[in-house]
Image (cartoon, rainbow, N blue to C red; front, side, top):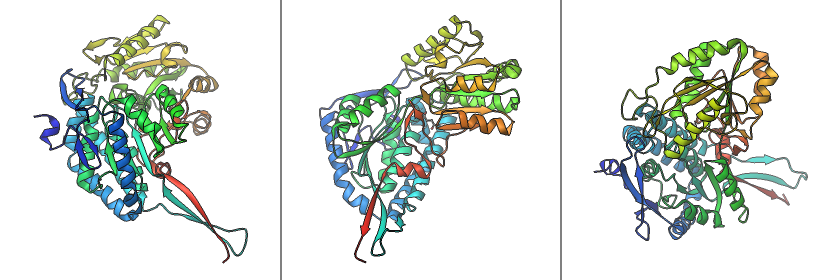
Length: 481
Ligand code: SIN
């Protein structure tokens, strides 16, 4: 019995309310990154299956957009409740396919469910406007309408939260959706879709297509029926999707790569900064877009910060996510391990001082690594590491910190630790990022607008701005009154 069978969920794609195999019968295996064991096989859908899902979403749109907001909200609230009811099962499936420690997986279920509740609440606040008209015989009404059929392509690092962050606002707005989860982590998405179905989401409103990325992505991007795509993933893929969206002029939300700086000034609360560093760097073994990629630490606090961070890192336990003692799970695949190794070797080759770790432990597990005196031109300063490597760059002046922090093509998240209110406001304002954690590393929440600028993408997820991504404005000019 597989984990999915155990909970009555299917390793099948969901099209028009039916759980289906690929039309050619092909499948894609899913592996546990902690053990390398094959844990499931999901359908490997292609372009034709995807076109069927698009047609189903188009057909379902008519009734779903006509459904009153309160009804959509009630269905989403039931989905939210079911997610919490099945939190343990969802967390187990997530840990099995993604590797994160069970405590983090449980936390992700709550985080993911939070988006469903938030957008259920927002559904009833989709209002309009009346604008004073230029003539007394006129009235101007502004309506917010669903964008229509939408698509989402989600990543493997947050198999639940990145799904609900896209599906919930789409459904709340009255859109239908075709979801393509990451090939590494389709099971959590399928389990969530089964719960959505149980909650009362009608057939065709949410379709889940697993399988061939190029074929599915191509069919979604080519279709004029699909009016919007929301994608979370790498910047190169985001650029490709942006180009592919041009012929049909699709709306896009792109949450792409990051290269988060974590700036610690001399006047910072050292313990708070170290707490923030631990969370901001080692959550999900460093595999988040908002994970700290480089620490910029001022001269006067530098040595104490390195010493405290090193001491705290000794508490990290590398091991399978199913072991309750583990705090650092495996990386997702061999390519990820090779990349972290490359960033470590590069930093050391350029004069960085290896303080802790620096090696693969076994399989896909990598030691939490600390490198001090990293030069500002090292790879970790330019390229997203996506692993448990903390590299510390020393700086002297505030202006130098701002220059180093902004010296990247990315602009997703940045962190800043200082107790000087003037400096806090100055530096937060000068950081060219979509999100800034000021004396705080826990910035991800459904109530705030998550997203980046520059090569980190466009659009916002979460908060009241998240639902606007799935709404169009229509204005009606009434005359002859
Ligand atoms: C991401 O890594 O893309 C999302 C991280 C988060 O929601 O905190």
